[in-house]
Image 1 (tube, helix red, strand yellow):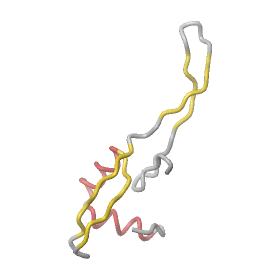
Image 2 (cartoon, rainbow, N blue to C red; image 1 turned 60 degrees about the horizontal axis):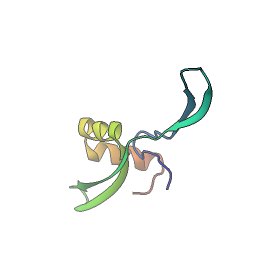
Image 3 (cartoon, one colour; image 1 turned 90 degrees about the horizontal axis):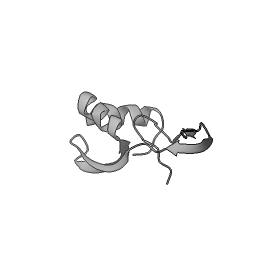
Length: 78
């Protein structure tokens, strides 16, 4: 599975690691993706999402029902 947040769409970032002598090598930053289980009261079931730390904050702010509705609108299978 790729390191991708289902809510925010955050993926791996790429760039350079710069040493003291300014020698540059390629490196990557992985998002803080975690598997979280949420309860959907309207469907009386649990759903499991791969969300980043920012995605968890979005769900806390907007509510799980609104986030799931937004995901389904984009065609995501939940």
